[in-house]
Image (cartoon, rainbow, N blue to C red; front, side):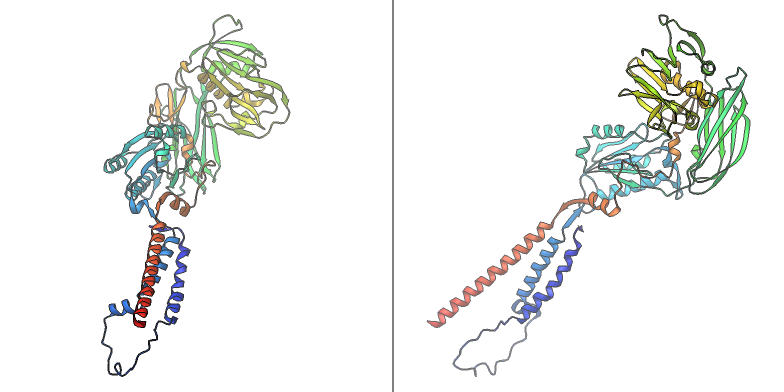
Length: 558
């Protein structure tokens, strides 16, 4: 039980006022008798304490009891779920990769399990469901009344290497168990706040830890016809102190680079190296930190698919080189012949099928409206999209930018000063990638990110060509490593093990959270009824005593 208005207990000070008024009140009655000698030799017999209380101060005790009941009511007594139990509980446990961060001799997931077990034992819900949240959320325990079975399944669960869960997927699971409105409380246990404005209570686990991570790694053939590969890696420090380590790059099992690095708080380190043409590459970071699963990253150069391209607009040497690096390309200009992909460069087309639009218009989806001489700061709006994987934003920053208006439904992935630089759209059999950079006037074609973006675009526009060269851990690929023609890596956002609260989630103070989540039912009315009953009883007793005295006086007068 808790009291929401503790200040009300200060009203108990009125007890001293009531006692003072009680003892100052005159209680003797003057009676006229014929003689007093009959009482002179009479001695008062000893009485017990209970008799004294009943005959002398019982009225005072009744009044004090009424005051205590009234104060109890004003203090707003409330029964908590810990006190009374019951209700329906939805428990969401974060099972993403960051929950495997080392913490207090175990992991953050171990701490989350301990907090969840403690919560269930305190709440004693009538029914509960448990969801493990990751990229593919899992229903650990369907809605059940069996708390023992739920606790057993919870303790047997293990974290995954997947990324964060989408809020929509979690909501769908909750709806499958009866809907959000049927749960008295929804609790999310994680090392970061949920990206949600729903009434979810967040229980945070984990303290700030050290982590130096490989967040980007890619290999691409050199577009000069030689049998060489450019290997690129990026290392970021997500800690509040300088961290040092050794970065090693491998082509198959051959070490091609070893470099000692020192990275400051919030900073990053990038390296590039040339290697002989191979199929598989690895980056390994030797460092002492608290999250070691992002200290290795994989990359592959997939087999080149055959691709028929309908080329519209201006030719570009660097673009053709980038295409031939990742596919066996045959180019045509006849729009009546069959083709797999449209490439439009500095022109305007009628959209159909799959198209790569480079500084081109495709009304009504992309409408060009002049150029901007001084582009604004570059923003990566959707960092997890397949098109921007391993593409460095600084490489894509244009010197001039074509102003474009995109139709509703077209997703902007990168922008400069509010204008789209990279956008994508897919609906049914129509899809396109828009790149708002003029290749003739931009150094973008000379950077490693240019052929990577072209490769990403090909595989996104034509998924049937095969798996992309990089996939994140999922149900299909449970652990990082190599899988046929693709490399499986951790989602780089999982390396941010010291993430702050989500901007869409309003964190509440501990006391506010506890009050809102623990309140079960108010019982102030019990104190109010008790005070009324006591005061009414006192009134009846006083009225009956007055009536009795009047009756005795009338009899004596007769």
